[in-house]
Image (cartoon, rainbow, N blue to C red; front, top):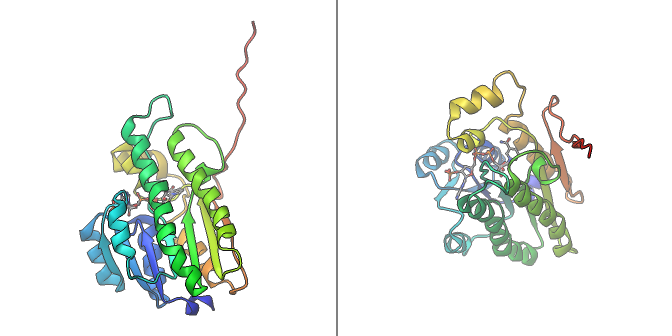
Length: 247
Ligand SMILES: NC(=O)c1ccc[n+]([C@@H]2O[C@H](COP(=O)([O-])OP(=O)(O)OC[C@H]3O[C@@H](n4cnc5c(N)ncnc54)[C@H](OP(=O)(O)O)[C@@H]3O)[C@@H](O)[C@H]2O)c1
């Protein structure tokens, strides 16, 4: 049972949604979990409920990340925090580009850069990256989000190469629609998000994603579960468009 190989975990985006449930699960498996997000109040409640250690910080502040991991030995790193903004490249503003790159990609790269050398030195570690079907399929809208998630997809493969020869496992979890706050944050209106995106749909729940992560971690230590794509049964990505023009 590889859960017993690991003593510590760091989970980003832990204040709500997928991250909060992942913290609960890992803590219940006996890991000392470092939970990271900006909302100190929610993290304190999670710490009270699970025994995790709360770290209220903004992932876009690289100095704060550096201070956070200094002196910590992290066995399981779950890069879960993510933001999405409306707008394709024709309509996105400067903030949408900068924030999504900073949270979805730059913070992930820095955390891996800061944590993985310790895993190499100890010959033990598991990095779990939450990407999205947006990283591997094209569909309308959030172009910057797609680009950042595509980078996380590629990074996850590349980390296997960087860690070659060491007992370091890398798992990319690639979800379809999960019922969390992310769409309410995108629309700036949680009720609208519920009405338009969740009511009447059998979306995934954060527990479904946490279950996939547990599966990857508890796989035998000679097994690397590299990529799990997990969608609602009634959600299918893809499609082909062809603009008809007669000149
Ligand atoms: N929900 C979906 O349908 C879906 C589908 C595919 C992939 N995903 C991915 O799954 C991951 C989790 O998303 P979710 O759906 O659980 O979203 P969520 O409910 O909106 O949670 C996002 C988490 O990220 C944290 N966060 C955002 N910006 C941050 C920052 N600057 N510094 C620190 N923490 C920050 C938030 O905490 P604070 O606000 O407290 O900082 C929150 O804990 C994301 O990477 C997302 O892209 C989600």
